[in-house]
Image (cartoon, rainbow over all chains, first blue to last red; front, side, top):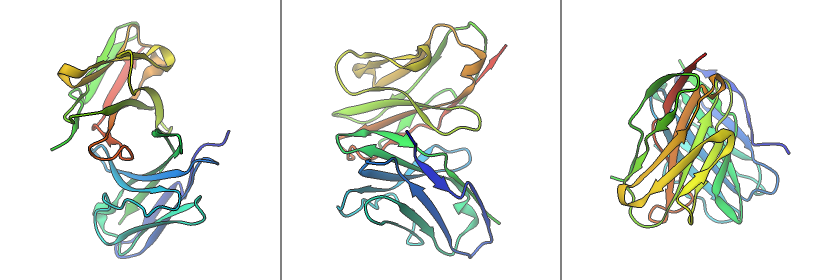
Amino acid sequence: GAGVSQSPSNKVTEKGKDVELRCDPISGHTALYWYRQSLGQGLEFLIYFQGNSAPDKSGLPSDRFSAERTGGSVSTLTIQRTQQEDSAVYLCASSRKYDQETQYFGPGTRLLVL
Amino acid sequence: AQSVSQHNHHVILSEAASLELGCNYSYGGTVNLFWYVQYPGQHLQLLLKYFSGDPLVKGIKGFEAEFIKSKFSFNLRKPSVQWSDTAEYFCAVNAGSTGFQKLVFGTGTRLLVSP
């Protein structure tokens, strides 16, 4: 079946601009996660959505970062007033309700802030 | 601080050599352990996972990992690597203490297998 998809694949933006990154989880997966992979570092948890529950935003690095999930499916990660240190690969993952521990990852969006 | 450590950042092997990649974590209590692999140009894929039971778990492509609770380790092994195993390997943990929703990753090990 179809996996997690993300768009765009690559995004180049200027410092100070806002960007939106999109994630389509696997159909039927109720949990959705965003991670960030910065150059030379591991993957860093950003935010977690589960059904209609309030999201766990504990990993968001600053208030410039926000995410929403509409209709329990598609999610958008928004970065406002981008900074050069926001340059990274942003990964989305999803998991089934009864196997939340196993996450399936999308291809990522490579963001470059000039 | 709770963390996952992968001690080898880069590993170079010849085909047919044996592989062992180290992974240590610092969480107490119940943990789930994972190895993910990222082949060049591809996205992260689950290689294997341990939740409970037999501490020796087998994954895809001939990989296996052993959970040693006393050592807080979950090392990845393969008896004979192939050129196609060239990839980056990530160890990851989610723990009851931080909420099973959050995967915490190590920094990864880049494996290069020469033909």
